[in-house]
Length: 76
Image 1 (cartoon, rainbow, N blue to C red):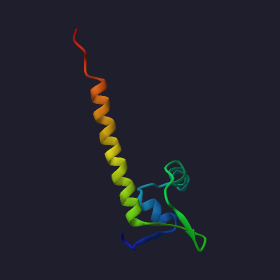
Image 2: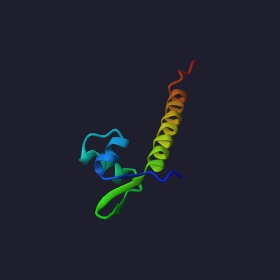
Image 3: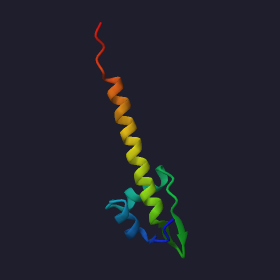
Image 4: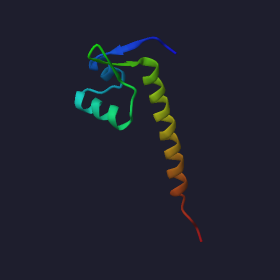
């Protein structure tokens, strides 16, 4: 696991490509992201951000495949 830490909301928001602090805090809560507080600053490992992004991409691909199966026309 990488030892690179993102410290502070600005670094975390940049890693997630989010521009709003309010939006970032909503994502942390909604997806239960492992953001911890160290010295009164939010902190997360860069590797955890990458892992979360990979899991979101694989979930999206699975969802698209399932939707394609549901939309297949049935000819009777």
